Image 1 (cartoon, helix red, strand yellow):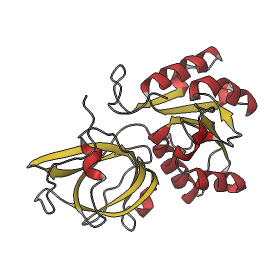
Image 2: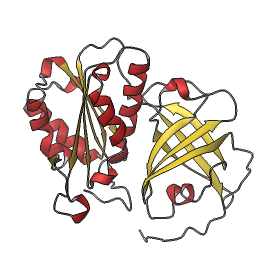
Image 3: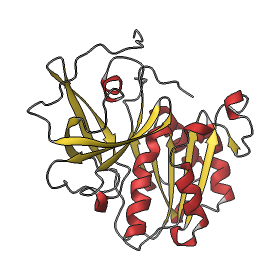
Amino acid sequence: MTQHHEDPRVIETDAEAYNATLVRREDLTHDLAYFWVRFDGEATPFEPGQYMTTGVVTDGKMLQRPYSVASAPLVANSEGYELFVRHVPVIRFTTALWRLPVGHRMRMIGPKGKFMLEPDDDRTHLYVSTGTGIAPFISMIRETMAQGHARRTVLLNGCSFSDELGYRRELEAWEQDPAYRLRYVPTISRPADPRNAGWAGHVGRAEQVITDVCREHGLRPDRTVVYICGNPDMILNVERALMDRGFPEFHVKKELYWPKGKAQAGVPAG
């Protein structure tokens, strides 16, 4: 699809369908940012791992997209729903989202999704993600910690570049706090790129390091539940590697960020 540097569409500032407001934004890189959207009225309850659909009216048509929530449910009323988003350089939803000032009205519906934690699960939790696929796991960690029921967790997050590692500062701080029971494992797929100069952590895609991560952290197939979120090809490859290590299929839960075989336009594969 043709790429565009500017989005000429007219975004309506006050459409009848709007029921929420963009209340905060923080940029991580030029094409990655955190957004907080809050309902006008009472927040809609959700479970960590679920997603909300947000949108705006452009040229008279509703333009919207679903995003996993990264915040914990208990702050939905006060802070809103936190979303971790990558800007896709084609004229779709994110090109409009990047143009919105804080305070702009929006449409939000949901929640939906079944990618949720099982209650009272005392197994070790292995969270595997690429890019913005880390968002539901941040929500899960925040919520279980807030409820005083932190679960032993190993979180593997793969990105092309170290500056794309979402929530890195928070995760490194949580790892130092024994109460979180967390091991954070970031990995970079393009170590030779100058943008990754000085990187001393794991190297390779998530599917290339998953076996080593299981071995390093003593993850046993019979005592570990796995959640995988992100690129569908990564999910398939990680699942295959885990099966080779003896992980039963019913111990693996998956959330695809777009249909397999349909690469997201404008997003690099690595």
